[in-house]
Image (cartoon, rainbow over all chains, first blue to last red; front, top):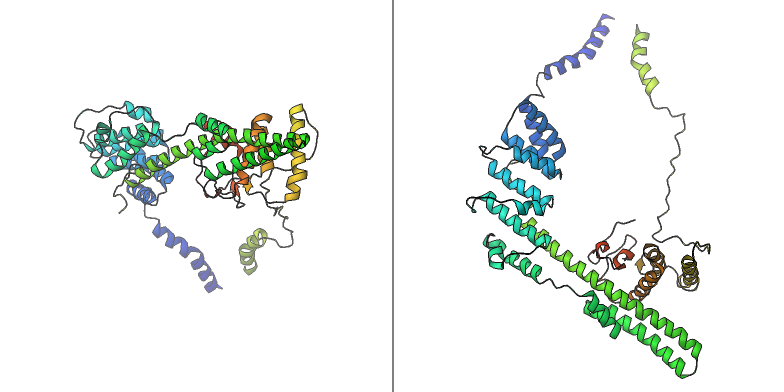
Length: 286
Length: 150
């Protein structure tokens, strides 16, 4: 009986004793909170990383923690908070230049192109943060479609590897190959389907001409053969397709222009991704 | 003592264990596929002359074309659904013009792959909002991109 009691006591209390020995680690020490936050940051769990960094910053201050906390906010699209936090990093910090760069990048990601354009810096334009600002300002001009300076001056702030792309975007922006909806509509009114050919929907144009033409010809034949009722019915059908085609040609020109805009913006987006404009590359997670 | 030990260990297990004599609730799952088409309402009840004209036109189209032709429209929404949606989103005159243009584009069986994205049902995705002549409403989607839109 005593034996079994002893065994039971051992079974119930041994795990507790064993656990008690383990609980000597202080998981809430500032170092461990920082280590856990860093782990979460590197796992791209930015929201929880931000929470851990915040609890660290309540107890102690470290500029790299402040920087990473702001970066975590930026990566979860919490741009206003990220801007505020990047601004907290002191000018004396080694991370100040990086914080400025990230500040500008955050404004760009938040699509605050006007705000970005209003920032003016003085000093050496070859400084990393200054040159980055100038490049982002130029790219935001390309995206917002505002009036731009002369080409040579515009592309001068970009490194040689990027100049080729920027030149292409600049020229595209200056002479965007849009189609005129009015001209397209007039063309289809004169020759059914020709407006659709103008908007590069060649087969649509061909079928519009065929439908209008065939029903028009049937109406003409019916009138010629004194089948007036049938003649009027097919005139109506032909007019239906004729009017629909003029309308559709105007819509087609608008869709064509939307396609051009889409391709242009996608091209810029690809450029930004290729040259790491959207996400800063750091060695925190090696 | 043994009894007490037995009760302490097993009573909570018995009390909180999952019971198998109580029937589980039946889940009300629907296994019907959602129809990509606008439901056909053959009713002729209309509140205005314009709606009455649309009802007559669309009923005639459904009876004389859609039901004879079968479920063969290459587009999503189908031409008749496109017409109903166009009239709802614009007005009867613009809706008719949009419908005429859609029929013309439907006749073009050659160039569809290079123009339209694909709906979940495998048909060409072509919604009225792109044809309302309102540039703000145009949403360009590249050809053959799969749309997960209900």
